[in-house]
Image 1: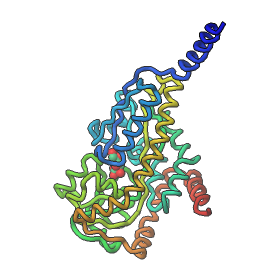
Image 2 (image 1 turned 60 degrees about the vertical axis):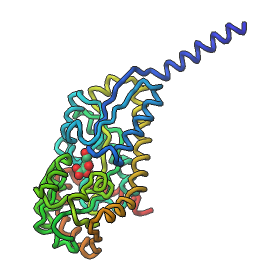
Image 3 (image 1 turned 45 degrees about the horizontal axis):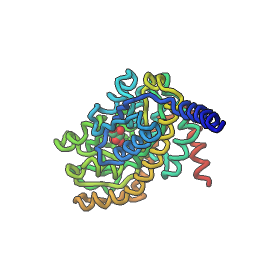
Image 4 (image 1 turned 90 degrees about the vertical axis):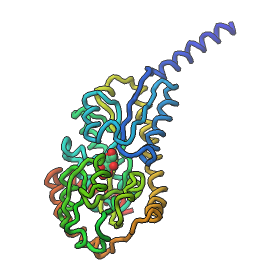
Length: 333
Ligand code: KDG
């Protein structure tokens, strides 16, 4: 009798276990644009560890950094075509496909990370993720690139006027372009993967990115001046090929979703904990660092107000109002 119960128990638990793990052997090529020693690289490796653990080693994530699989736009196309399974990159390069993502590049949209997290992880952030499947992409979560700051090789920027005439590389969409045109820069849209060489050859004078990205990309080797502006908050987005996603079981999709959420929290924490040290390391690397005075930030805000008008015209008043309402909920607390 005891053997019968044991055998029955094995069948039940064995079946339950096999049902809980409807997982095939999978190789997931996960591309990203920053160097391996970066917040992006560390978070992709964290994601890989969690996926492999949760799948009993059946789902293997191959982290491929430094834009080895191409710039963000090329990786996005590879995901749509099913030639690559996953990537993390800028939402900025999605704007050509889904214009609503341009809202995240509005200058001075968020005042702090708390607002960014609440809006990106809230109903509006989810609404924009919901627009991706019809374009062949699945958006799992937002990570953090962070608040962007200006570097250049020509002069320290101590006023909004000092930006005038600088040839500044910007992300490839109209919002980022308009932001720096509004303050008189000669703004040049360019893929991130081409940026270091463009700075090194002086094809452009400067660029703008968060401290951790400036450090991990070694921009201090080709940029003399860093001006703290915090003019824009940039999210990253973890994307999956829909063509490939649709071949996965519910258990496999849950493993990826759960690991994506854990990697989001890990990456944001890592970025925030290492940001101050990154600024210190940039100073130690010899960069001339200044903070743009509040009076000049106010001028930057005023000069770039027209950019927000352009965003509203592009994404619609309704979505803009939804974002503002979500921000107000956090600001009000
Ligand atoms: O692949 C790296 C880019 O996704 C990311 O760094 C975007 O901030 C970005 C930029 O400046 O292009």
